[in-house]
Length: 186
Figure 1: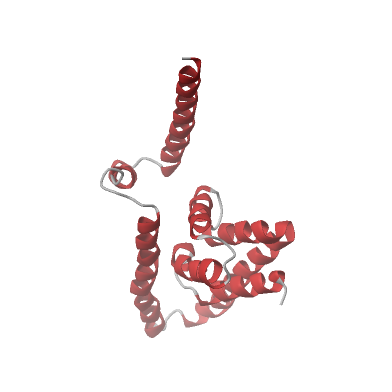
Figure 2: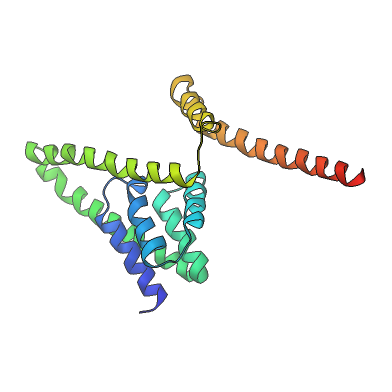
């Protein structure tokens, strides 16, 4: 099977059998992309998680586009993205067509409420894995904690935090380069 078909099939399967959105898909995507197919290394996978969060759009689709493009260029990106989008699109379309007629069924509402704890668990698992892979220690834990506090309690927009991080990274790189040049002259 060609990598185009394999990528489409893999993304279609991930999109079809994952409830809870992009973050809930992370463990399944990691298993399929890193462990099973070995299309990316663990470090590359962590990088695309970060990149996909920073880009506008749907998290899981951003990830599939990146993987497809890295493997097979533009056509790979398109096919991987279609594989990820089609199941959700089809399911939401069917729900929209049918749900209006069955919205008074309380057992259906109970099913959706029952799925919520599973979704929380699906999101928690990749957070723990990312924690381990990112090598967060007591000296660096303040960064995600401060970010969460600023967003949640203070109400600062995540956009401003991203802007501050990008500016800080460039400033750090600029200062480091100046220090290196200064040492070279001595």
